[in-house]
Length: 566
Image (cartoon, rainbow, N blue to C red; front, side, top):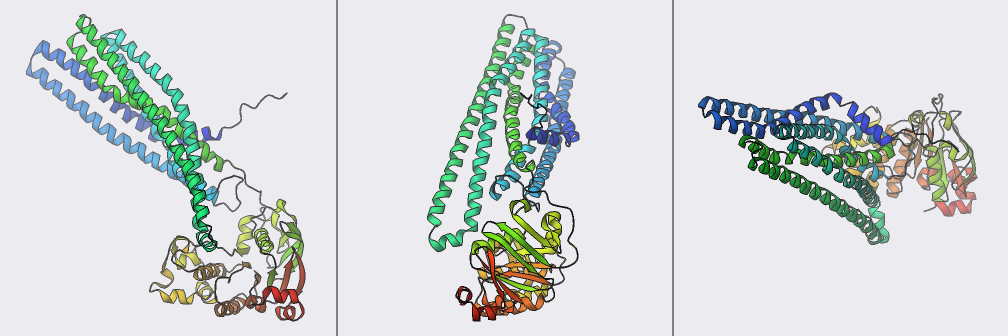
């Protein structure tokens, strides 16, 4: 029998501790200022009680003037301490939320994917709502401490008047917190589940938007919308549950606070009637019973926000602590552009073996689309090396020994469904702004007509996912981006499926001309691209079954002719 490791790190707690530690200075100043605010608020009824007592006893204008000046000081302290305290805390809160958003986004954008069962829409929710709610801990702790200050000041002041009043506040506050701590745990678990369901609904929306055109094409949009409605309804029902729990919490807190305030008021009235406290102390007690409602409300709400912050931190930990799918190497490819696939078995690929020499233009005609997708995924390093058998070598070095950044700088794999981002034509073609072949890439991809069509040229605005471009324009824009990268090895997967035959013919010739002397692999069934290749590899049932020029294969291979002839 083994003893459990009680020192195992708790990621959510670590995230909250990190947020508190690096905002320590802002929280100290915020706590001091908010403590002054709460102390000033509490001091107001105390001052009123003293003023009533001394005014009734002395009945002098000097005492009245001094009392008014004291109230002015208290009001000024309350106003300024609140303003500057909240300014400090909210700035720290906003900054901390930004840090966590960036960190979650950085995890999602790393070259090596993390082993986390979340879709992009769920990660988006974590990077926004959960990051914001986690950062709220920066405000929660100072407000909790300052509210405690107000309760303590009120208890001490009432205790000086009569010990029973002070004990009533202390015991009542402890009882309220005990009751509400039970409800706050329910809020934390309910909020975590709500965030998860909202994230799933967001992921479903992202999937629907991505595949909206194909869904309309085969009439699957209604079924897809029904599927989203089910997920959204689950999120709505959970949101209603959370609202009910929050409502029960707020109602219980308000009722208990009101009961405590009423108890303090009635007790003070009874003590005054019995002559055990004077009129000034009665005014102070009644005033404190009213003023203490606000700090008690804040004090009783803070556990709820702590549980919400913890629940959001646990969801962020799903992304931040997830291990990478694979551990890449650290080496860089040697000079040279040869590419070798050595007996690779993955998905539909069966002992696939071929070599592309440096500077060669090779086309791969895949009879099965799935095999083409599997080959592109392996070459793009989207599949961990330990997930397939065999080896992929770039410039003589195995893919697993190279860093992912180095591989993608040396070998670019452009997918058939390359994403188009909101921005301009120029930023989509050259995101880093460092390419020296933008104009050549635009010309080779036949994107010149799109550029000439708009007055802004390459600075023409592109909407998210290229919503204001046609399918063929989006595809040519993606091809231009791949060509502008000018990588040593370029792999294109079906780069011309959405363009007409004439444009496809021109693109094929332009790509072959622009990439002359650079290693290029095109996975395609396009006759135009197959014709300009130095040689064509026929990929059937996961293996290379034929190899020759396009025209020789047309003349001697009936299956090939049937597969690629249009």
